[in-house]
Image (tube, rainbow, N blue to C red; front, side):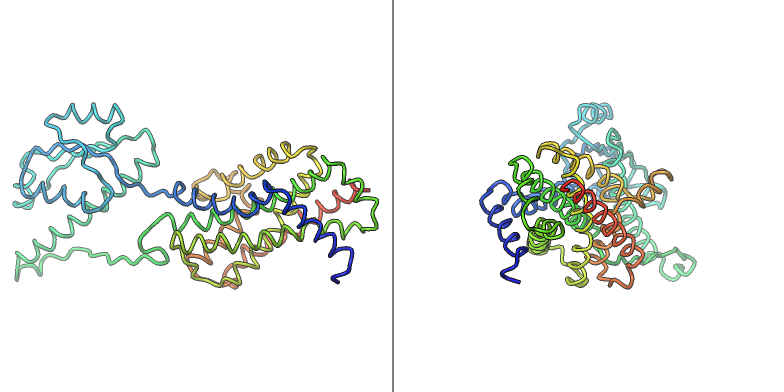
Amino acid sequence: MLDSRLFHFIKKEFIQLLRDPRMLFIALMAPVIQLIVFGYIASTDINHISTVILDEDKSYYSRNYLQSYKNSGYFDFNYYVARPQQIADLIDSGRAKLGLRIAVNFGRKIVRGDTASVQAVIDGSNSSTAAIIQGYINQINFGQVEILLRKKIEKAGSSARNLEPIMVNSRIWYNPELKSLYYMVPAIFAQILMIISMLLTSTAIIKEKERGTMEMLAVTPLKSYELILGKLLPFVIIALFDIVLVLLIATLWFNVWIKGSVFDLFYMGVIFMLTGLGLGIFISTISQTQRQAMMTVIFIILPQIIISGFIFPIANMPKIIQLITYLIPLRYFLEIVRNIFLKGVGINYLWYSVWPMVVFGVVILSLSIIRFRKKID
């Protein structure tokens, strides 16, 4: 085995890779940099929301209510104003994303048990940000109402038996802190694996074309399957090493610990790589230069990221788009990775995602190899 043509060809590929610092950087350091950068910017959590305050009541209760916003850690009270028009001016200029106006007699109404009014003006130019801010406000208000209700029951004493409010005891599984980072980091892991396997394979083969060495390889004693394996196996090994690097960054840097089996994650990653390797070989057959290959990789990967559930929930997409997502291999691997990371479930719970991914990987890789062999011949 160590003296076979295949072994020496793979050795040649590794030597050639080590002599190319740019390719080596892409293979080893790019996944780490991408995960660190994307891990910070891909979070949908919003902190330090610029807020303008108009407290027309200036009572203990209004101050206590505003303090609940500060304690949440999401809001920064950057502006205190005296007139409603000033709230509009600050939001119009973009300096504030939220305006809170507490009406007169806010505290007095709370003491009497009446409904107290608070106006929240949200900058809705970015609908996603506005929806998140609205969710924060609802969460804070729910907490305040619960506190006031408890005080009312305690004050009522024996007559509290007539008060039977509905108490909801919520338990959030898998992501108790509701941090979007825990949801996004596994997705970034899947995206990086797809890009690296596609990009390395396609550029390595096209580099042989540009140097004119592909024709020389075709006339060597190497059989076609040895040529294909020799090109693929080095990048499979590199991709496995990238899995280890990305997993270490996810756990040690972002504290996103994998709750499931690392072994399941590895061999599911290898199966998913079949799709990336197959697409990389296919790209190499339709591209003449490395620039063309990189543009084709971007053309293929962007739609997958957009409609695979990477960021946007598939359930919110139009029905026709939801049907198209069943043809996206990344969709299935995202479900597998997120379930292994967050829920810790085994493959026996994920077969509905595993078998389509296996089918896509085998079919795409097989068809690409057939096309590649025809090009060689």
